[in-house]
Picture 1 (tube, rainbow, N blue to C red):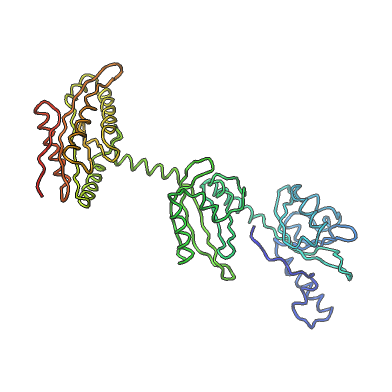
Picture 2: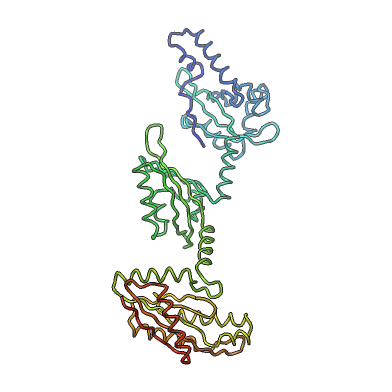
Length: 444
């Protein structure tokens, strides 16, 4: 709840004295009346005096109570216990504590109360203690502000944050005081206010691989006062990993202190969609293997690394022999099932660091880094053996063979030429009945 500074520890009569220290009592009374009229002219403010001694009860309330709550002021004063009948049951303890222990009730407090039409409203009360000549508290005198709309807007904001999975936070850099919104606790998989939020608690929940990024963003913003925006993962107490998008900026306090304020929004679904779209763009929809676009990127990177390490890259071009007959016999559905099975086998036949892509139709290409002639030949033979294994399609055993062409390249090799050489070697292997054929290596 936003803080409104309470009135100073004085009565309305003493407040009138602020207009001039040399006033006599008549002038002070006149100043008090003018001050009271000024306050009571605001439609969303009411003034009151609540007697503490000898018997607690409402002693005076301004006419604005009829505007704010629909109650005639004379009706309110006629029943000293009236206030206890209109305050929300859940807020009665706070009111009764303030009456019973007025010395400890210096801070403003908010109460829900029932308007004459049955609606619940909120009042924010600011009061001072009035004492007799012995110093004994005899009354509370103050003002109450109608903050119903403020709370309604705050509730709507909280609802909007929950719908958008958006939490907010604030860090007072000087005092190290951290505040999280209820929704931020929920984003982290925690109950609201389950523990006192701290900067360390926040970092502990960031995924270990992203923690340095999150920490650097905060520290850089504190140092440069430039806002930040970053995506990172968090780990919930149950082990679930979620993606958050965080924004933060510096806000200066009235005393010049630094406050870092920001928001976090759960973007897990967005990240999953981005990943799915990226995967679709770079992978074959039937087999799930990399497609030509990703193959070209992987081959270019492999050749770049080979140039730095003076190593060779092997490109293995694979074509399934007799696949057209399988399609004719089993139909496209059966043919697709065969392709999926063989794609899995080819990917399992190479090393984890190698890439197997579907080049098109029944053609596949493998990119193998840091290989010698012997390594490449061995990998090609493993691929051919994997393709030769029978495939069961709804009880129908399909037996295929594969022709494999191998081309080796390294420093300054052209990716397209390597694939072309491997393709040509594959056709030579097919022409001689299948198996493996190694292309002559091009010179520098």
